[in-house]
Image 1 (cartoon, each protein chain N blue to C red):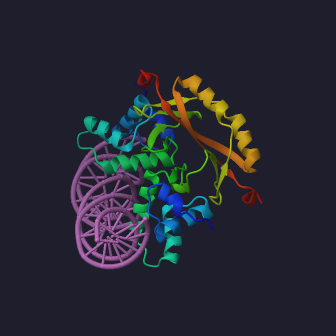
Image 2: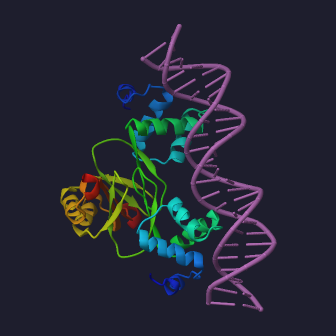
Image 3: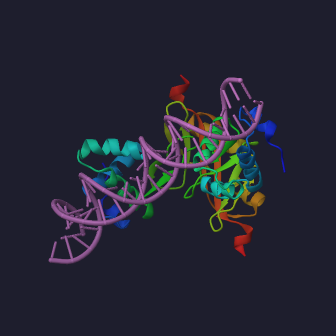
Length: 134
Length: 134
DNA sequence: CTGACTGCAAACGTTTTGCACGGTA
DNA sequence: TACCGTGCAAAACGTTTGCAGTCAG
């Protein structure tokens, strides 16, 4: 179990028990929806409010402690901010996996086609995971 | 101006004036948010209801006449279904451009890293468009 | 002519806000 | 101790639903 106290403070967030638990849940789950997070949090703090979840998610987004992943045809999930990466989503079990792709070639291709100065890419693949293939 | 009467019917949608107008707006704008669509539609049908917009957007999505594009840090937009393509979004003026990328290489890379059977990719780039560079 | 579509109003679910209390630094 | 965070309740917001009248096929 990581200790997120200092990391939260570095993001201008006080280290309350609720926030430490959110960080821990995100670390363990990798990706989780807001409702999923609430369900898990209720088990730890039986009187936690949905408002607290929303307030913290929004503050953590603003302070770049977490980020939202918008998945086609599904609910958004949240994850801790880390090195750039792409996502693979299983259309059967909805499992989400991080992958570290070399995006430089496709980014250059996109830049020359569009004539935009490109800064970042959001890449999400959709398919069937190894477990669901069986 | 395209005539979408038959195309709508091919998608199991009756060709009402409202739907023809939605198709026309999407064709002309390329990409538009729900509120944006409503604003444009009110100019053509001053008594149109937001419920009608929602019902038609949902039916058109279900019947694959249009599709949703979920953009990071922004509202979703809708576009007519056409050949697969990727998107480039300007972070200054929010302009959205379609680009036709060769995604086969990166898809193969993602498949071998993840061991998923990948079906489709959603790729959105973020940057500054030529106009906003100036 | 019949079933589907529209517009209105009400209902619904999700997200935000205001406030009193409690906890972090 | 001072300020920020929490939890509750209410409000606001976006979206959906039910229904009566209308229209496309």
